[in-house]
Length: 235
Image (cartoon, rainbow, N blue to C red; front, side, top):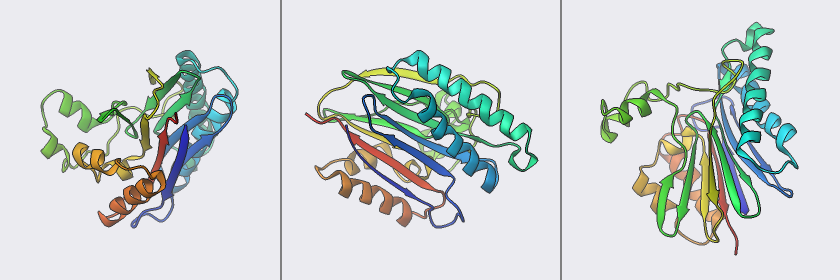
């Protein structure tokens, strides 16, 4: 897949606690992590997450089982790191990844960063948010309009590193020519509806699309760090 990426501190944060991974090779890896737990904790957790993926999965044949094992190991490492350093107490991170094989793409996911797939004119959110607002949407307590302004919409219900192990979502997708994937932190996705994101992902120039996505989030307020990976399966 061809990949372009952007990461920005935004307009209101003092540091960028997002991290990302673009690792070429026989089985390329792509990931976005959005850290939490204060300035130092968020930076550390997200950096440990992407470093852990690289260390455990680089050169390995892609499987869902390998992803689940990697996430567990990363969660244990982050959890034990904070247990021995009070300055990092409470840290954790989202972690959303794609792992590319010859004919398939495998997704791993924990948290509220997102993976979107644009395929043959249809945009779907491939990941499910592990967040309070997502649970309230699924149970019908909130509708889409009220969810966008819900005061606790950034509260996540599952993260990597807050416990010694973590249950990650995995899914396998066929790799089709022309597929376009977007991995992003919530600092990007909060500024788009499904319809506006679909429109933003149109066009042939991936760099121009990535620039437009980032600019839209910044012009919308840039309240959080913004990270995106835009990927396209080439013919």
